[in-house]
Image (cartoon, rainbow, N blue to C red):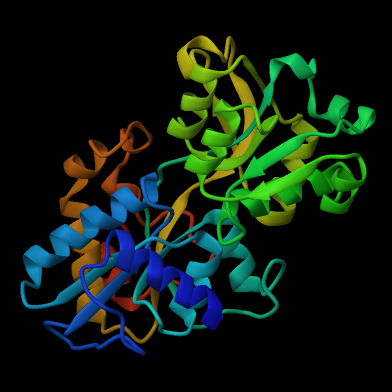
Length: 332
């Protein structure tokens, strides 16, 4: 846990920290001394939203030291639970697992509470070099093809979803290595660089719809995008709380010629239960009031509806967020 935090702290300092993190957040009812929001990787949609929330909260709390830091949906749950950060972002499946204490977690995270569903869908991509001649994931498994795969770092949902999908086919990371392949875990931009240079054969994982990283790779290489069979997607939904997602025809400049069924999730803002209700209420309100600005952040936020911010939570809402939703008539 300390190793993860040190890594995230270095990332924040190098790229986007508005302040240095101390041992634990400082809370106050009206103007907190400091607030930290841990998002996804730099440049991803979660980070864009976190930066937006940091801006609007700074407008409200002009004396507060606000830090927006790069993180990951898996690590953020642990950081929020331990009070290392105040707010974080995570995915449907990881949020549900944290509430139940199921894999990839080994306990129930009781200090994590929901704030807002920001709705921007993430989809699973199985993008592979066309020269490999694959037309389905099953062919990859049956042929035991030695694919050099790249996915996001293990701190985030993309790697988790990749390993879960492979497990549905009875395939482990060790199996892939025994076939002569390998799974590389790194930043998306590094995966793209490897793909452009022909050093990987496939880029897998869940990320924003549409994904700028997969779009870049598709523009540089001759690739194929494989769908996820309905039975596999259904099993993943039942086991882990994923959602049915469709990559629409025309995505990636026409690479997707017809609607492609996969699976994915929505994103959520979560908070430590000890943050004062007034502070969580204010962040929820600022997010609600910033709907138009959020919709312009990225195509995946185009359909953001502030009246849907309270939908679909796998766990309890923070009292501050709940109070705001009740005042707006979103919750009874």
